[in-house]
Amino acid sequence: MTGIIARRRLGAHGLEVSALGLGFMSFVRSADDDEQKLATALVNEAIDAGITFFDTADVYGPDVSETLLGRAIAGRRDDLVIATKFGNARDRDTNPNARGVDGRPEYVRAAVEGSLRRLGIDHIDLYYQHRVDPAVPIEETVGALGELVQAGKVRYIGLSEPGPRTLRRAHATHPVTAIQNEWSVFSRDIEAETLPIARELGIGIVPYSPLGRGWLTGRVRSRADLQGRRLAHPRFAEEVFDANRALADEVAAIATEVGALPSQVALAWVLSRGEDVVPIPGTRHAEYLRENVGALGIALAPEQAERLTGIAGRVRGERALRPAAIGVEAPPLTGALS
Ligand SMILES: NC(=O)c1ccc[n+]([C@@H]2O[C@H](COP(=O)([O-])OP(=O)(O)OC[C@H]3O[C@@H](n4cnc5c(N)ncnc54)[C@H](OP(=O)(O)O)[C@@H]3O)[C@@H](O)[C@H]2O)c1
Image (cartoon, rainbow, N blue to C red; front, side, top):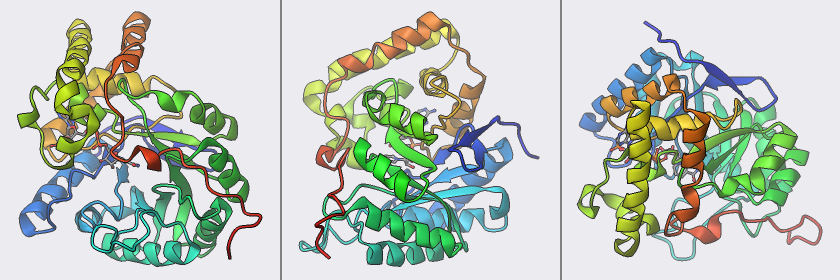
């Protein structure tokens, strides 16, 4: 049975998705049978709840997340919006000469074939450049994406964490439907420059890490609660941990007033930023998925929303593992190396 989740329009080109998506970056460990069972059960539960929007990337795993998601949606793909990303060059860890970020047209054309194959689909609904390549004019990258749209392999295009001027240039080359940037009670820097441009151009906003990578759930109490890449993340570093946990406790206190969970209040805050906003919290747990869907029914009083809005300025530590890759402006087309 299909649940009822409000729909939101992403961008100005007819793409409609559930107001909450599901991020699939928590599935990176292995594509073995046990993980597949878990992923398939979670995806089915999400679809049954009314979620239509699923987010992955070729670099998650790498390959693992796309592979698990592809098998999980088999037979139910038609009504779904599948988003994936390219551009974080996949062999950068093993090949020291590999480009860290690759936006060359030939790379785009090769990357899409891999994602289509792993996802087991004949088109990607929303295909993002994961990070802007500082060595490739955006017109070249987006030109290649436009060709994929022409060829029917991609329906809509997006950019993740682009520099603001690069976003404008991209949109002038081929209409951009969505940007995917970090945005949460802990991370508001999108609001300074990128958000006004996106809104001026009619580009939808997909906030990633809307739960502050777990901080905003109130369930991270010590570094022992963390695994994998999160242990290396600057906002979970030992020297800032207690300060950031105190801020998470402020969110939890507001949640108590609201009569909701901290995660629900954090998602309700992002959802209340505008009808053009569709967050994609990530989880591998059905229980968390249900809680997150519950955020759609939470209304914050203006005063509570304002208190939440005041927290980000006090968060300690960079918001990204690779801050230099955030907000990159692509080189100009004129005079670019061929
Ligand atoms: N474009 C980009 O550069 C970029 C960067 C990062 C992420 N993303 C996308 O955005 C999605 C979400 O971001 P994220 O995963 O970094 O951060 P997030 O959604 O802010 O937080 C995810 C973390 O919170 C936990 N969690 C989720 N719901 C919970 C709940 N109700 N109670 C307690 N814990 C809960 C998850 O645990 P479990 O996983 O253990 O269930 C996971 O550890 C990703 O899946 C990915 O698709 C994109």
